[in-house]
Amino acid sequence: MARFRVGVQLHPQHTTWESYRNAVRYAEEIGCDTIWNWDHFFPLYGPPDGAHFEGWTLLTAMAVITQRAEVGCLVTCNSYRNPALLSNMAKTVDHISGGRLILGIGAGWFERDYTTYGYEFGTAADRLRALRAALPIIKERWASDQPPPLRRIPILIGGGGEKVTLRITAEHADIWHGFGPIENFKRKNEILNQWCMQIGRDPTTIERSVSPRAGEPIEPYLEAGATHIIIGMGEPWNFGPVEELLKLRGD
Image (cartoon, rainbow, N blue to C red; front, side):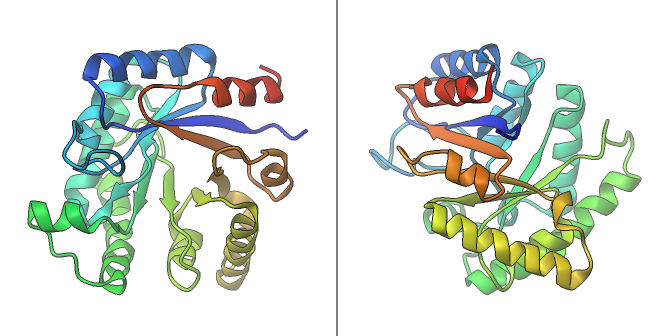
């Protein structure tokens, strides 16, 4: 079996900081390669007004309490922050982590976040245009701001829009994150390959990560080209599927 990376997305909702901190530490202890949160302001399931923590301040704490695993938001909503500010935030967390940040980013979709916090929701096309405009600015700021990032910060783009999102991914991303079921992942993965070939990029330079549906076998995703499996969970934290993945990999 080809080597693959194992990640976990810990949902920052309906929990406490103490419980979340323990889950992050445990994820690193058992050998997860990447540890993620998400970038929302309200729970995505369960009681809609339950406890919830902001992604980037939480990400800073995650960087401090880990030593080895890469960390990131899966994914940052581009619309919530000016791209120059986001680049500076990312660079700062990169330094705090010792060069372990992945900038996960997407166009945004959760309307409640926008309307409650006073952002313009607009259309999906508006949000995608904003993402396309933001990525060059982020890269330019990394190249000019002082101090620079400790490494070339990898960019992960999440989403499966076939006409725009996957083209932006081919243009800018180091990692593409997709979702199950397996037939969906296969289709989007192949369309990303086609976009890469159209713009003259080697498709193998983009890492393929995926969040399978609960209970789905992992082997078909690996056979389809996934090299990074990310399991999402909320409290109560059940690391069983993650531990099984690590055993499958041979850890």
